[in-house]
Length: 52
Image 1 (cartoon, rainbow, N blue to C red):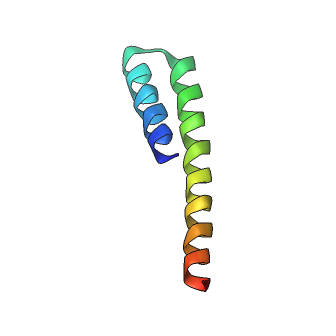
Image 2 (cartoon, one colour):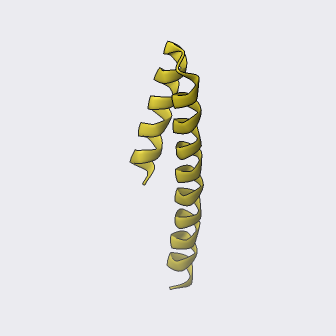
């Protein structure tokens, strides 16, 4: 999951450098969503490992 977040972040940065604003904002949006999903899953797995 974190891999895809970084891929979309890199795509957003490259698209932003070359001036493709729509592609950059869409890729950045996907990266942001995937990052928050990753953080939630990480917190759940951490809590589960501390409980068990």
